[in-house]
Image (tube, rainbow, N blue to C red; front, side):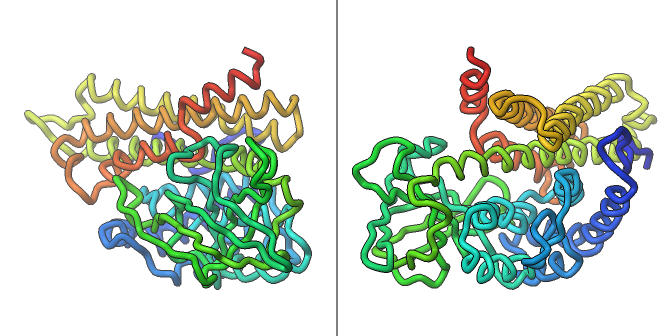
Length: 392
């Protein structure tokens, strides 16, 4: 099959070490994930052992401190990991296997030494699973309106409330949960982060069924008088909103890289099908209308990915004011998820009847587009946030 995209993107973003890492991750995905992705999606789960396998070759720990079992790495290593994981075309596996990527950073950045020593090594070794619990029923992206409370009672907080749409929520061992520690406060004031362990009495979990991402577990969580040690407070009390916003920016950047990779997976599957499928005596790829569709798809991928790489480079170099970087991150998520939507739609069209059948990457990704356009902040929220950051 001829390829539209190079395994080693050129430019100043990736070193030889990045390329070696990419090949290593690609081999892992081809061996441990791709052959089983469809079956896992149909089953609605994947083996917990996959966390350990990913940890054993250092994937779970990429970008985390060495003292906790991680491997310090620049932002482009994380992007490579995200891109190669997406090649299997199964967002559900990626979402749950990578849930530590949004659940663990606040602990690493702001948790006490004791909390980090107890939690982080277990997650990076693949022994434990970490998740983030922010969204509430009726709350959506409006974090400042959260209602889950944590009332101080001696050496514990008593937590009451609900969270929903929580990735890895069913089997997470550690949950970084947004709570309101000052019930009299309003808006972002009084919001804190607590690490709540999965076996805490009073924690109830209900599995949710979804349009896509079937292989990931997604949960509705209810906290009914959960007693959480004060030592599980992440950072300072009342500073949680700031931590959450910073975490969102990193999540949105990685979602942008993932969206580009999913768009590429659709484009490549459509190209392979077009080269093999014959209609009226000729391959589909010989039809001008199909060739033009493929060029349009490749153009969307390359345009979005160039935006994402440039943004990552700027962030890594510390260029530009924070407000501009937030705005660019919002725009990158919009552009990349729109590219994913376009390529998934065109791929299903090119595959025709096969595109409507379960088992193709394009069909699976087509169902997963919307969660990428909504998760981490919907397109509408992204535009509004970007406008405020740009002073519009």
